[in-house]
Length: 358
Image 1 (cartoon, helix red, strand yellow):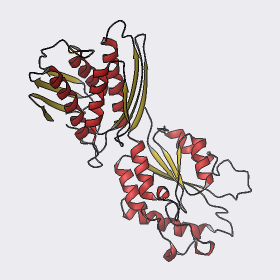
Image 2 (cartoon, helix red, strand yellow; image 1 turned 180 degrees about the vertical axis):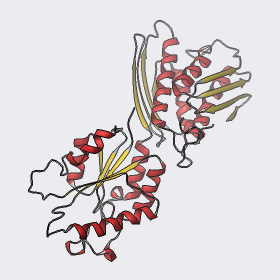
Image 3 (cartoon, helix red, strand yellow; image 1 turned 90 degrees about the vertical axis):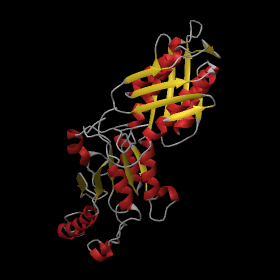
Image 4 (cartoon, helix red, strand yellow; image 1 turned 60 degrees about the vertical axis):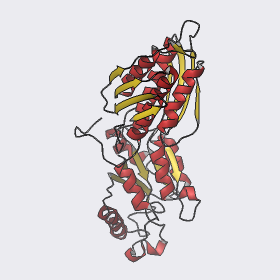
């Protein structure tokens, strides 16, 4: 994953209510779209940048004199700036609909200067607008388009759009194929369902499900491994794929809790310390009294968590004690899930690091 997360925005009907022709330069008639300010603040705190792309038919002609437009446009930008919202760039197409213009939406010409200088994370960038041309523009750019309407459905409002964008930024899919295993993983940190795990090892499935259930995120994981050889490759590669998906879903980790937890299960107790630091490190302390629980060799339990820490880029310390091996193993998986719940949970908009990166 590379590139910047951008929200491209139409102006009229998206940032401000669509003005009537005679109100284009009437400053007292300008109304911002409901909910737009808190929505953009939430997105800005989450690390999104904003670029305005707008068709303004006949700008600079008698039908829309430049000075009339500039006065209203400056007023709108100043309104947002007064609330702490800045637009990185504003691109305008002044040509009429009937003119064959490469810079008019849904064509991408007006973005040429921006695209030359910036790489976009197209999976996590969006176009928000009120017209079909805005959605076509998004498709041409290879990003998702979201429609907003003043009197539209609940999904076509700024609060819903912000929630959609923030949720989409916390999803990831990973495919991992080797000679030993074939794995597909889908993670969504903004949802708690569905959770479905199929590895061919029943108890192992149940344990991975515990991570997602107690971690508070949606997880779909399917693995076809060489179980006719042994369980090692399946357990290890599932951990690597899961860690990679979680790391991708966290993005730049802006706004997360970062740290994670103590969990008792009957006589067993698991202590987990977690730091999503970007620096993999694993410590294990504990001994199991049985060699297997179901089809899962207990020697692979610390190996699973070591592989998870490596691919997730986390410092993970686990200490477990108890008498019942089943309880001890399950306490470890549940406790790691609970630690992840705390660590990945959005708690603000800042990056939780003095280094400026995680």
